[in-house]
Length: 199
Image (cartoon, rainbow, N blue to C red; front, side, top):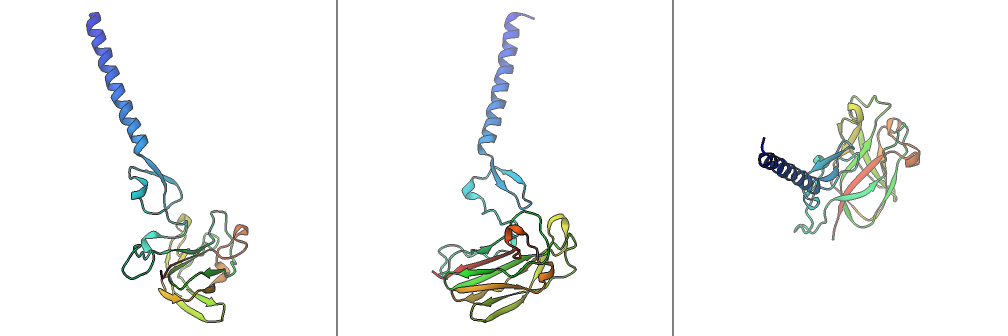
């Protein structure tokens, strides 16, 4: 093989390698890491501003009732008013959490967690809210979905769409015996309360 041919092949190989590295470099620049619903990290080529907000560990965004900011209804977008979840090991026997509604709001969704020592439930129960003045809102029937490891009906979700005045409210779950809690939640049952407040 002549020195000229050999140089040509080396130059061609170097060019291919350069293009490959350039392409790989571009992919690593455009790939953004975002939390997945399963708690693991996934990679997306979508820019961050185009991605949906990452859901809380026990909140399913597919069930969310979202109102766009600036909607002509005069209400703001749905947002978490209370969320005491964490990713540590859980135990049964959660007590009722209390949270504040800072201004008149519509409660769009309430979700509680019942891992129940990996047994879950054959059905779901109800969720209600008790105001600090003694008024009880609900109870509302819940829909279930699987929890970690496919545990049946570990998540109980109510969609009350109830208007509440500003104040202090306590979440009441119909089965506190299996309501998940741990030391990090202070023994309080895991719950997420979503709502939208009037502007």
